[in-house]
Structures are given as C-alpha cells and as structure tokens.
Amino acid sequence: MCDTFLALPSVTRDKTTILSKNSDREPAEAQAIEHIPAQRHSEGSTRCTFIEIPQVQETYAYILSRPFQMWGAEMGVNQWGVAIGNEAVFTKVKQPKRNDGLTGMDLLRLALERSRNSEEALNTIITLLEQYGQDACGGYQNRDFFYHNSFIIADPGSGWILETAGKKWAARQVHDIGSISNRLSISTAERYSTNAQFFAKQQGWWNGQSTFDFSKAYTDRLYTWLGRGSRRQACTQEACEAQSGQLTSHDAMHILQTHNLDDPHFTPKKANTGSVCMHRTSILNPSDTTGSMVAELRASRNHTVWLTGTPHPCLSIYVPFFFGTQSLYRVIAPTATPDQSLWWKAKELHRWINKDYPVRRAMIQEQRTALQQDFVDGEEDLLKNEPTTQQLEEFSNQCLQRTEAALDEWIAASKSR
Image (tube, rainbow, N blue to C red; front, top):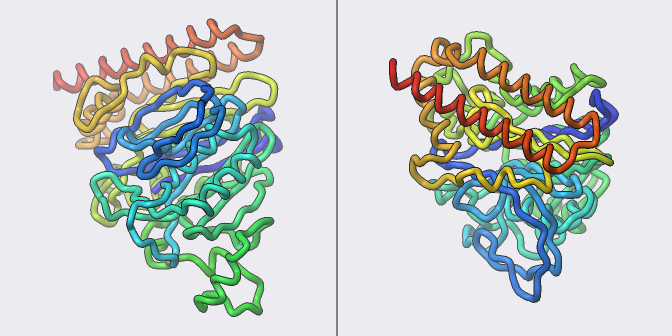
C-alpha cells in the first residue's frame, strides 16, 4: 500500500511543484536512500530487479528511496526536477508469475535515469512497459505478491497520472492537484494504450457502446476494496484542496502523517488500511510506512528532496537533500537485519514507542516538531538567496547530524525506562 499526491504551482504558496509519497511495504523491509550520480555508458545492459535490459548512453543524476534488496525505487527525483511515485494497483489482468518483466519500481527508476521532463518520463515508462511487461514480484518475504502499478510523474511545471493493467494503460494530465492510491482511478484519459478498449471488450469488461471507463473495466474490486485506496486517495486530495493556494512542503509532511482520517485518539493497534501513515496490525493490514518523501521542484532554482530514511512519518524527521552535494553518501545503507543504519535504529525506537504510543510519542514529540520546524525554516532562508553547493551541503549535513543525534538520544532514553 502507498499514497502519492501532487500539487502544481497554481496551488502552492511558493509557486513550486510539490510531489509527496509514503511508501508502505512489509514491516521488516528496510529502505535505503541514495544519491546516484550522472553517468556515461558504453554499450551494455542494466540489471534490473529480475531481468536485464539494454543500457542507454547517458543516465542522469537522481536521489531515490528504495527497498534495500531491490534495484528499483519506490520514489525519487532527478537532476532535472523529474519526480515520480508509484502505487500497487489490483486489476483483472492475470500475471503468469514468471518474474520475466519489470517491477513498477524498476520502471520508476529507469524513467528517472532517462528523462528530462514529465512527458519524457511518461513515454519512457510506457515504452518499457509495452516492451517488457510487469510480470515481476513486488514483495519481500511475500514472494507471491504480484501487482500492477500506477504512477504520478511530475516536473517543475507539469504532471501526469499513469495507470496500468498488464501492458494496458491510461494516462491523464494533472491540473492543479493529483492524488493516487492503491486503486485505478482514471475514468477518461487523454491517452490510452492502443488495445486497451479492444481487450476490455474482448474480455466482456466493456460493452463497446457506453463511454469507455478504464478504471471500471480493469479494476479487481475485491482486492481494491480491501486496500481502502479510495479512502486514502480522498484524504490526501481533500487535504491539498483545503490548502489550495497556500500549500507548502511542510503541509505535505503533515498530510503524510495522517492516521485514520486524523483520529485524535489514534494508536497503532487501531490502524487500518485507511491510514495514510500506515502501521501494520494484521494479515488484513500487513504494511508499514517504511519511507517517506516530499520533493519540492523549482523551475530555476535548487530542488529540495525531503526524505525520512526511516519508517512511520508520524515518528520521523524529514531531512533535506540537494543535487550536487555529498550528504547522502555518508548515510549507512540498511541491511536485512538490525544494524547501525538510520533506518534500523529508528525501527527499533518505533517498536518501543508503539507499545505505549500516546505516552511514548509525547516524550519525543516536542523536540521532533521543533527540529522539523528548524529544518523547514532554515531551508526557506537558505534558498531566498543564491546558495553555493557548499552551503547546501553544510546545511543538509547539519540537519542529518541533528537528526541522528536526536535519534540516539531518544534510543538512550528508551533503554533507561
């Protein structure tokens, strides 16, 4: 389960584009945050999660958040300000489960590597999807978890929603605000795959006479209903609309921390699949939010990529990262078991907090809120001028170090109780 939403310059306070995502995965699936440099390549291939595909001559720099064991990424931004988040969607199109295709995360990362704007990224994903398909397991310990994907694709001035079912797809342009969750939502679109309507009619999913509705034709209703994607999609959409014209990256962070429509008496034991900030409770609610991102894209200035690098945004701090800096290279990548990475240290703290959530969260909340406000204010002040790469790196390093120090302090306090 995941949630992604997009606000274009027409509705944001600073006339920037803001793309935000919570990545919901299996609870013990650590998520790595990385900065991949631009590269030139000779002839060769790229090894994706399950298959190899031909390499291109040039790949662009990008910042991503990905499950530690996978090649593909849950979300990311490239040097040109192309930002993408994807969601699992459940459709009537069956998968052979041979792992001979690309995961949605592979498609996302490949588009970041190869695209200079949102339309190029859209076309990159469509081309690769139609060529290789997406018969690829998206699970970690659950090796039977296969799904199709939807995407929000943005750049500093535009955005697209792309929804897929096997090699079939529909795409529509975003105007002002766009939100996706674990459901097909496109009824009518600017663009369809050439055989989307024919195949739906052939399968008896569309009568060929009424207006073609991609979502209605291709949705697997049971799995989609269990995932409560419509509820979460409405939550993020309505939260953005409520702040239309004034929305900031800080507001987006708050939206990503929403529980069960912001229940004031929330505890993780009450979490369900309608929660934007996800906490696992049972086999019917099997996911945790394992990473979160807010990307602020600017047409003529530095892009800011806010990443938690930790689970549960309600207990985390978003740290700003910038292109051209070295800050992310010092972040320890997590492994399969508890280690000294930021992700696993936070995971252990969150487990302790969740045992008595209202009381133990209150122990860190004031300091966590103050740190986040300092980072947001500091980033805003820094970007009012023309900061050098060194200044951006120093600021990012300071935020990262302060986050790590706070986490160590909270862990020490937890062990003394």
